[in-house]
Image 1 (cartoon, helix red, strand yellow):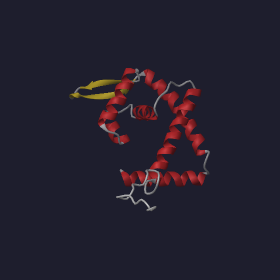
Image 2 (image 1 turned 90 degrees about the vertical axis):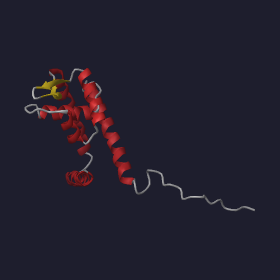
Image 3 (image 1 turned 135 degrees about the vertical axis):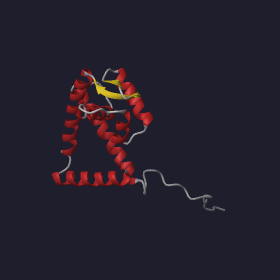
Image 4 (image 1 turned 180 degrees about the vertical axis):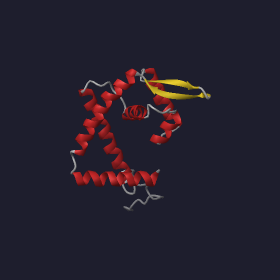
Amino acid sequence: MNQAFEPACTPIAPPWETPQVIPAQLRRVNNLIFRKIGQIARTNGVEAVTPMHGWIMEYLYRHSETPVFQRDIEREFSITRSTVTNILQLMERKGYITRRSVEQDARLKQLVLTEKGRQFHEDTMRAFHQTDEYVAGLLTEEENTELLRLLNKLYLGLK
């Protein structure tokens, strides 16, 4: 009396199987790139930093001539207000940024890199560029161009 067991419902495919192959693979590659950034940063004597902290500092650095507010960071990086709040609080505690009140609206706080933040930005950008060169070196020039084209297409489609 060996009868085959039939489940009562259709099993759900694990997340690493279709249709989620692309998101899962992007996440894996993203994790490995973040790990490589940390490894290169450490070899250059840069204190541990998340790539998001570095990218926010880069944004503040590039926009130092114009006022930048938390909402600008939220929009630029497509991250939630609570996530940005936590990141900025940590950056402020570490002395990388300050928040300045704005004359026309006391509720608004302009984000400004401190001198310590500017130096840290330079060290972090060096690690990012070295990681970028390393990752780009794994592909041909044509493959890099195609990868960036496809990633931009995905970004615009999902935005």
